[in-house]
Amino acid sequence: MVQVHNLIMNKDNKIKNRRAKRVRQTIKSSSLPRLSIYRSNKYIFAQIIDDSQGKTLASLSSKKVDLKGNKTAQAKEVGKKLATLAKESKITKVVFDRGRYRFHGRVKALAEGAKEGGLQF
Image 1 (cartoon, one colour):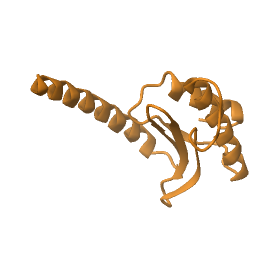
Image 2 (tube, rainbow, N blue to C red):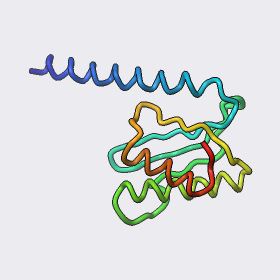
Image 3 (spheres, rainbow, N blue to C red):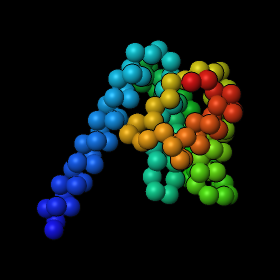
């Protein structure tokens, strides 16, 4: 039973890693800062990274900001607040890096919130 479980988990990880690699290949060619997402079971984290300098320009998470509502609503608010932080740093255009996550649910809500806040993808 354990061996079957490990095979399933390895297959899922391979698919997720392949998706992440595919997304990063399309992003690499851009000179714009990258909006990177990490989604845990409880929180969502987002940061804007300048890959040419290797520095994080702005970051925010639902853990640091006390928000109410379900996780999707919290993700949208994180996106809006991250967009205001980016505007303060004079960042208007970014490349959206969803990583190994599909573009739906909390990831999509964060992207929509960032767009509403004024970031352009």
